[in-house]
Length: 140
Image (cartoon, rainbow, N blue to C red; front, side, top):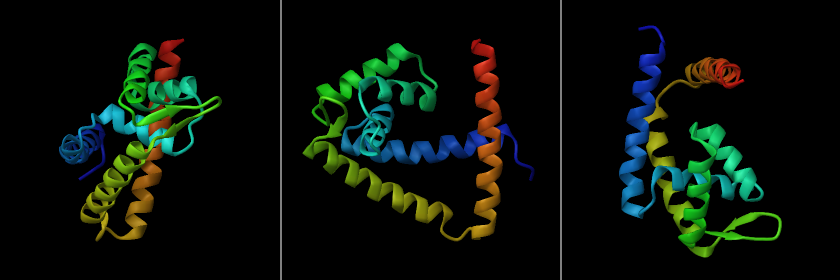
């Protein structure tokens, strides 16, 4: 079997669906989880998070701002003077979801040889880079 967009899409949709099954149990939407994860990584302020959501989720700025507003209103994220931080509830949700992601990852990737994972990672990074470049060119 040769890697192509259909195979990549099927793998992404299947793994995302596994994650979303767990997210439903925690009361988080996928976009909310992505925002929480970005805040945990030290994204900076509101607009920095909007930019990351636009780029990462391929959504428009208005939808990204709505997600940022919702995650703040939900009490998962606090607004500081210079950056966003997770609240105690946000940290708890982050820990629970991260644990489940580690479990999913172990089940799906655990017995794949490291050299195969390295090759797949390089190929997918290259495909993503090229697709993002074409999207940027199309937006200009």
